[in-house]
Image 1 (cartoon, rainbow, N blue to C red):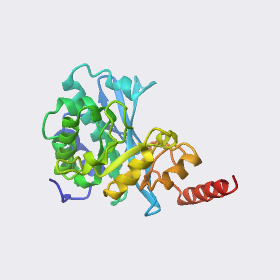
Image 2: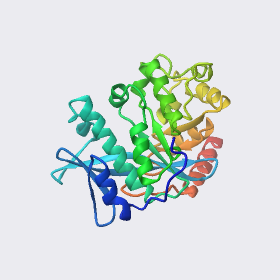
Image 3: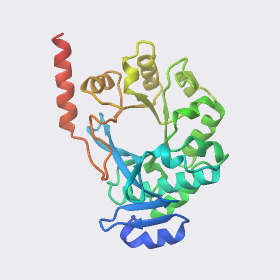
Image 4: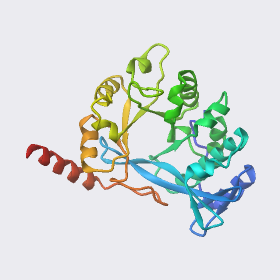
Amino acid sequence: MNSIAHQPFAVKDEFDLIRSATDFSLERAEDGWISGYFFRCKLTSAFQPVFSIASNTTIGHTAYIRSQINDEIALWPWQVFSQASTDAQLVELDRLCRAVHALNYFKTASDSEQLFLVVHPRLLESVKTDHGRTFENFLDLIGVRTSRVTIEIPPAVNRDPVLLYQVINNYRARGYRVSANYTPAGAPGSFSSVNWLIGPESLTPDIVRIDADELFRADSGADAFAENALRAGLQLLVWNIDTPRQLAAARDIGADYLLGNYLGSPVRAVSTISPELIRDTLQAETARKENL
């Protein structure tokens, strides 16, 4: 586990070394922003800020891939990944995306901020053991601890409890933080039982993500899950927050972290969320409820 970074990361000085030491096709723009190439697709990063209610500050960013083909046509991420017709190509593409995100993020973010990375479910199925080892080696190269990365397990993996257990424990054993996705009882791959998380053969993610829309579905069970999860020592991240009402609902269930376009959209920069926006929105929502 790379618990100690070897040296501070300076992409300007190390870019040529990094490019020569990997199989990735990388380029650096004049402003220092890194892009990678997969076939004809140019891939780069956008980051959406994650806010901590406890610390009243932005504590990290979720990374999203942004892509173009022939420098003109923008592609959705699913369109890019659909070009990986084999498992080997999918693994290469997913690793390229994580490398581009890490290069862009850690040259800009503060030393305390976390990079949140989604891993493609097909990669988790294709790589049978040692999940996170190759990316750990890359982080070693740029002098970044695995503890500064939170791996987000996609909801599709919930359908395979054995794989989910293996993936979570593989990543945590290498020092990464891990988040899993809540899915309500009765849904395919339901991830709703806290007993599943805290038993002797427990799945132990650091964070569980809850879609803000689930907070307004009477049959979702999200409120009860959040209460039990917090009691079990898990942290909650409510994402997809698009309205003041959703922000207030996230606060009301005890969410630790907040994410959504209402707070800050994904952009080609490492931005922050205004604490005043959180404060003023919650005050306004409290007043609105009192006047109902």
